[in-house]
Image 1: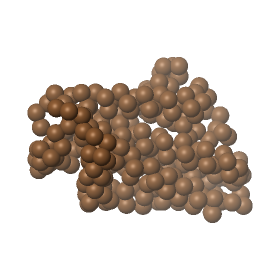
Image 2: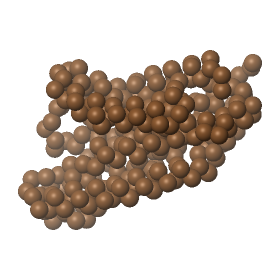
Image 3: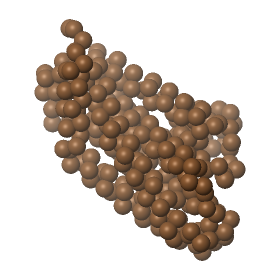
Image 4: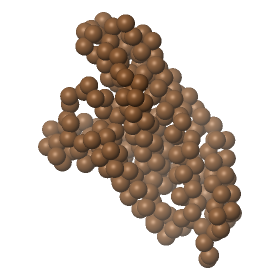
Length: 252
């Protein structure tokens, strides 16, 4: 089977993007995640106002919800790749788009197109809320530092979403993929905090943490933001590659 032309790839990307934006569960997940982020930002800001706010950074407080916010993006990634298996729509997709590797690759690319602005808006909204409520008490961060941190947060959430989509493609069912990923991020990963930092820094979630670690934080400075981004991207690319290879060998 010949490789599709660039024009066909563009059409495939448009089709995958159209499928994602017309999927109700995608928008329900993004909306729920956005609301949860604002609620958590309000809660952490309230705690900051009641405590020693003068010693805290707006970024530290505004991004404190990221540990929980990532759950929404994990669900987003899994839904993006598992939704077509629910009613057997994947067979129709592969009949129309027989190039399996191209189809799954463009699905991830389309997912990134949706995730990047959504992640940036959510991260910025939390920081903006905290800034509005604590601008007179908390330590204010320079605008260039804030932008770099927000971009790092966006990158981390995007990598998490794409990695989750790859895991979803491997399992092809929503529930097992959710159990594995949520179990890792919220159960296994916290249990590994006693591991030597030189080992733990290579875990995908820990490396991603350094992508948006505020400069004022003094915790675990074992990676630079660029190093954290490199490790996170490597994990993401590995899982996407494995998913594509298995997808091409499996029956639909």
